[in-house]
Length: 330
Ligand SMILES: NC(=O)c1ccc[n+]([C@@H]2O[C@H](COP(=O)([O-])OP(=O)(O)OC[C@H]3O[C@@H](n4cnc5c(N)ncnc54)[C@H](O)[C@@H]3O)[C@@H](O)[C@H]2O)c1
Ligand SMILES: O=c1ccn([C@@H]2O[C@H](COP(=O)(O)OP(=O)(O)O[C@H]3O[C@H](CO)[C@@H](O)[C@H](O)[C@H]3O)[C@@H](O)[C@H]2O)c(=O)[nH]1
Image (cartoon, rainbow, N blue to C red; front, side):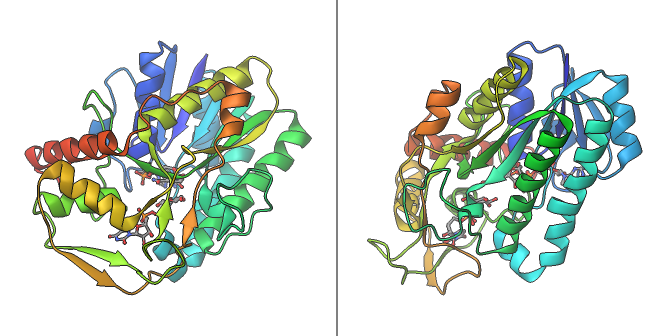
């Protein structure tokens, strides 16, 4: 059996590839256009097909040639504020291209799909921690573009007899504890990444986007999940589907929120650097608080996180950022 990982050269996808290799799965094939990913992030035993997920003939040929039964679909555009300024670009990348991929994959014989969805489908939830059965209500084009793909997958799975797990990731952070991969995107916008860059002097300061939210300290609350824990959730989802399990939609988070200001304190404490912080206006598209209802994935898949520790997550992110500096990458 073989798995096709779209976006496998990216941050989270590369950790999924490592998890599959570590688990001894027969064959791992990555489809990636390297728009934000890196071929060097892939171990040598992986086959990289460089191309677009919407190239249906490439997708079909790849699936048939490698006898792929399962698709893990990570490839996407991922920056919430960019989706506000370029909504049509996000609907193309995350919705239209996913439609083409799903169609080609089902046509070529894929039986199982794991989809990278997002907490952004909930928007500004009335309940936190947010349970999966709360009606989605995204407040930015990124969340909408992903929700539409969840719906396409649900409908296509029912019509064509395949099974899927849609994993709604909360805020993904940290790096492979063995130092093999991490968040490498230049000009990344994610808080922990940006804060580690500020601590290492790669950025002059860190901006806090909004201090007037209805939260205890006025900054936004997020649920930060460690990236290898998230990859492990994909592995148990894959085993569930291959074992004949039903389609599922599951949150991936720890069920606890940290404010932006709390995260900054931890990065300062772990790094020992009191980098400059600027209090700035709100960023477009940001919900004030988003925390996972985290019970269902444990109950359905038996997933047990191993890295639920913000200090450890920050330590890994710092170590990876230093390693990137040594590789002369930003
Ligand atoms: N990072 C987070 O906190 C977070 C949270 C929720 C959901 N997600 C989802 O997780 C997935 C992976 O995110 P990431 O943080 O690893 O991002 P990333 O940018 O590091 O990875 C995306 C990968 O997809 C590739 N790609 C993009 N468009 C492509 C296309 N059309 N064809 C082929 N390859 C393409 C890129 O080159 C890159 O390797 C995304 O679907 C994202 O929406 C991420
Ligand atoms: O330099 C920065 C960067 C971020 N933030 C704030 O930090 C929080 C987290 O922001 P960020 O790390 O950019 O993540 P999100 O915008 O919450 O989005 C991430 O988490 C979502 C799930 O919650 C995913 O869907 C997205 O793909 C992923 O980028 C937000 O309040 C931001 O305003 C700052 O204050 N300063």
